[in-house]
Image (tube, rainbow, N blue to C red; front, side, top):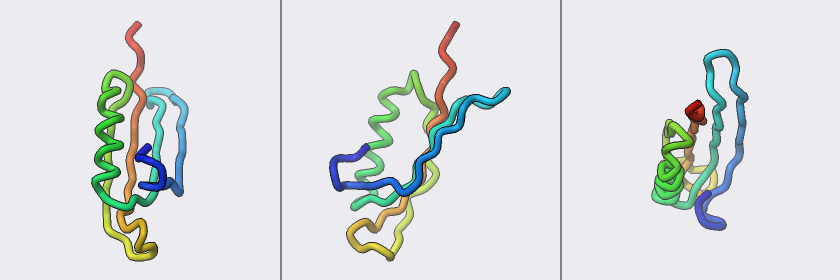
Length: 82
């Protein structure tokens, strides 16, 4: 996660593996700056052997001026090698 108070999640879901679908973590929230989200995504990518990262969007929003960047991200858990 970004540093304290840089972002917050308003939705987090974890889907278990089902048939051919791998476990998936989905998150959505708001950040003070788009760069805070990009840094978080970079940290997830350093664990590239564990996740396939699927960033969806970072969009401006006007509801909360302190957290103007709305984001969504999806991380698909890679299946460990046998």
